[in-house]
Length: 92
Image (cartoon, rainbow, N blue to C red; front, top):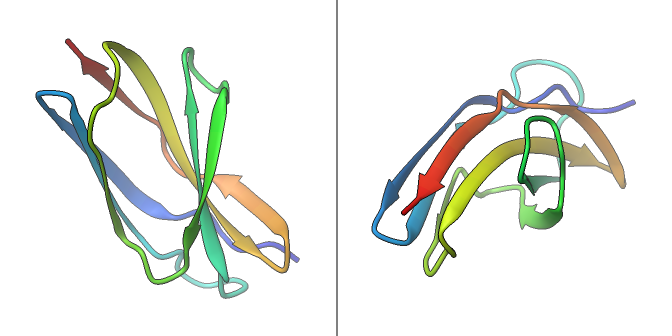
C-alpha cells in the first residue's frame, strides 16, 4: 500500500528563500518519509528531494529567480503516495 497525501501544503517567498509547511497524512498507511517535488509547470517534476518523516517545515534559501510548482508526497517502504495540493511560488 501507499500512504495518503500530505495535507495543507503552504508556501511563501522572502527574498530568495522559499519556506514550506505541511501536515502529515490523515489515516491510511503511516509514512516513513516525504518527497518534495518541484517543477516548472503545473503537475511536472524536474527535481525531487527525499525528506525525513519528522519534517513538517522546510526552508530553501538561495532559490534562483523563477516560478516553481511544488508538491509533497508521503512515502512508505519505497512507495510514493498521491501528491499533496500544489503551491505556486515565484522568486523575483
